[in-house]
Length: 73
Image (tube, rainbow, N blue to C red; front, side, top):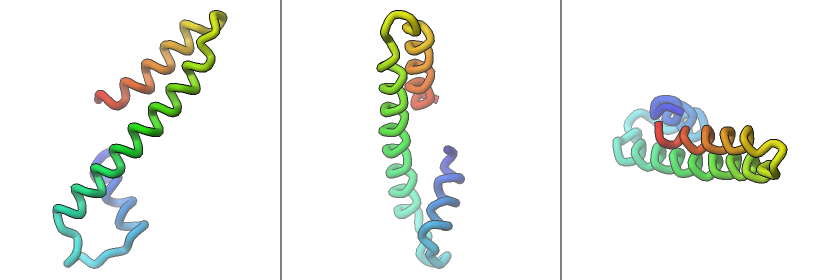
């Protein structure tokens, strides 16, 4: 998600008047969302890792690597 998408979802979830939309609050929301994204990516990658049993090893490894790489973009 982009920072703007995170902020828009936050405003939809927590309707706050314009006066209270300060930079610190926005920074906290974006930081929180980034951490949640990282946890979710790792959990998804672990699902792929579980299929690393020989037969689907290459595809599972590629899938897990691709998911984890999204955090490096």
